Image (tube, rainbow, N blue to C red):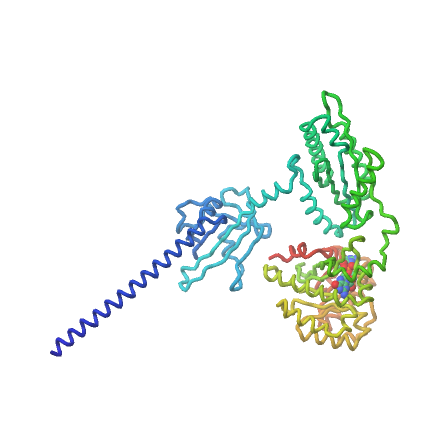
Length: 592
Ligand code: C2E
Ligand code: CA
Ligand code: CA
C-alpha cells in the first residue's frame, strides 16, 4: 500500500516536473521566437535605411551590414563572420587611418553618448583616391554576455546633400556660383577681415541695355553672350585671385579679398570693360557691349554690413554718369568718424540686436606650443561703422553702466560655448573673461557667476577672470572681497596688464591670483632692448616666486616666443599664434 502510494507520488512528481519543464521550454521558445522576430524586424528597418549601418563584433568581424553599407564599403554580400574587406579608412586630423585601428583607439565615451564625427571623410577601401564626405556615428551595444557586445557604426553619406547644395548655389546658365553662394562666402570672408590689415573690394558689374540687346540678337545669342562673359571672368578670377559670382541675369559680382588701393580695383574694372567690348561678334562684326561698374571698398566705403549696399549705390551713381562708367563709393568725412552720441545710444540696443559676439584668442603653453586656454574678447559690429574696437565702446559702456549687462552676456556666451565644446568632445580649455571695474563694484556679481555656472553645468576650473592691475589697486578692499568669493566658487583669477601700474611687492604678495599676465607694452621691443629683457625676466621670476603662472601677452614673432620661453614664461598669447577669432574658427585649434 505504502509502496504503491510512493510509486504514485513519484509518478505524480515526475509528471509535474515534465509539465513545468514543458512550460519553461515553451516559454523559452516563445522568448527565443520573440527575440528572433524583433531582430528580424530591426534588420528590416535597417535594410531600408538610407544610411549605411554596420555591426561589428569584438574581433571586428561583421555581424550585420545593410545594403547601403555593402554598396558604400564595397563589401561582399557573404559578409557574416568575416572581417571588413576591403578595409575602409577615415580621415582624422588630416591623417588616413584604417577603420579597424580607428575603432580600437576611440576615446572612452561617457555612458549615454555616442561618438560623433560630423563632416568626416571616408575611403571605401577600394578606391584610395576617392574620399567620401560622411557624418560618422559610433556606439556600442553592450550585453551581459561580453563576447556578444557589438560596435554599431552608422555612416551618413553627404554626397547627395553636397550635390543638392551645388545645384542650388550655382547659376543655372553659366554654372558660376550664384547670389546664395555669394552671401555665404561674403559672410565668411568678412569675418576674417580683421586678420590682416589689407582692404577688401566688392565690384558689381551690370551689362548695359541687356533687354535691348536681347531684342536685337535674340534670346539664344544673348545667353551665349552671358556664358562667354562668365567664362572670361572665371578664367580671370583664377589668375587674379578673386571670387566671381553670377548673381542675377545680367549682374555679376566680384569680391577681391586683399587690395592695396582703390586704383587697382578701378584698373581691373577697366580691363573687364575693354575685354567685353571685343567679346562678341555677329557675322564677323564686333558687337559693342558695355558694362557699368560700382565698387565699394572696406573700410573706406564703410563696414562689411553695408558694403554690398554701397556697391549698389556706387553702381547707381555710375549709371547716372552714362553707360560704361565706373564709380567707387566714397564715404564722406563726417560719416567716417565715430559719432560718440550715436554709439552711446546704439549700445543700449546692441545686445538685443545680437550685435555683440565673443571672439577667442588662444593661450599657448610655451613648452610644446599647445593651446591650453583662450581669452574671450568681445566684438561689436555696428550697422553703420562696422567693427568698433573694444577700446572705443568699453569705456562708453562703463559710463552708462551697460557694462554689467555686457559682462553677463559674455559670461553666458562663454559658458554656453564651453558646454558645446564639452558635448562635442573638444579639448577642455580654460577661458578667461575680462572683468571691468563696475562689475567688481556691483552687488550680485559673484552670485550671477555662481548661478550661471550651475545653470550651464560647466566646471568652474574651466573659467578664469582677468582683473587689470589698475582696477585691482583702485578698489583694493572691494576687489579683494569679490575675488575671494569668486575663488570660493572654484574659478581662477589672473592679474591682467601687469607692468602698467605700480603694484607694490607687498600688495602683489597678498593678491589672490594664480596667473600674472605681463602687458604687451613691456615686450614690444624686447628682442632688441636689453633693459626690457632684464625687467621682464625679473617679473617672470617674481611671479614664480609668488607661486603664480606667467602669461606674456603681445607675442608677435617667433623670436619673441622663443625668448619668453627661455625666460621661463609658462604661457604665451599674441598675434604670432592667432588674433582673436570667432568661436567656430578657434575650435579648430582644440579639436581632438
Ligand atoms: P586686454 O584684456 O589687454 O586684451 C588683450 C588685447 O590685446 C586685445 O585687444 C587683443 O586683441 C590684443 N592683442 C592680443 N595679442 C596681441 C598682439 O600680439 N599684439 C597687439 N598689438 N595686440 C594684441 P582688444 O580685443 O582690442 O581688447 C582691448 C581691451 O578691451 C582688452 O584688453 C580688455 O581690456 C577690453 N575688453 C575686451 N573684451 C572685453 C570684455 O568682454 N569685457 C570687458 N570688461 N573688457 C573687454
Ligand atoms: Ca585681458
Ligand atoms: Ca591684457
